[in-house]
Length: 206
Image 1 (cartoon, rainbow, N blue to C red):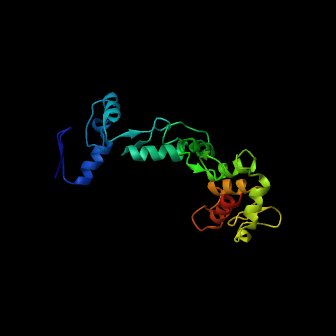
Image 2 (image 1 turned 180 degrees about the vertical axis):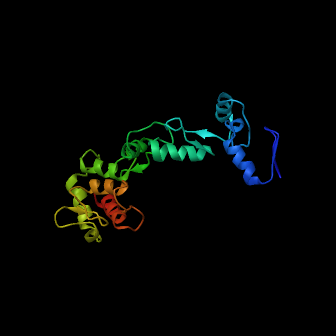
Image 3 (image 1 turned 30 degrees about the vertical axis):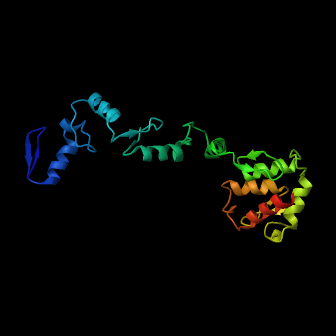
């Protein structure tokens, strides 16, 4: 036996009770998540706005409702390209990734001067452009990378450098490293990887 206290009706089975809850006009504004009954749409909407059990995405046309703030945040990142830190929204996931760099720590040190950078590729580009007080140049960076003992793992026939994973060619070491830092393929700068060894050679000999 199941009882609907809103309608003051008894049901022989739970199935009949749940069918009633889902179809009766008296339950049109029920909140099934919180098991609460409301007499009007306005009251129900006020409940959704105020309840900690509801987290609504106002960017979606159908106003998707999530059970936790964490799920709403992940939805905003995955579907609406929203920055998890500053909450800015971007047209594409690529634009979001490019923006995310501004939130990274500027802790990559240049081996030739006291400047620091957000990424390894930015530091190597600084060396290649000749702006480092240590005197490095594009030529010295390229030579250091090509002369390294493991250079066969990241060099190619048609370009100075080649991604060891997808075999895409690059003229500059900084471009290869930038490729590794992106989501373009699975190559990484993890310790003892080919590109990590390349970077170490550049740091030592440039």
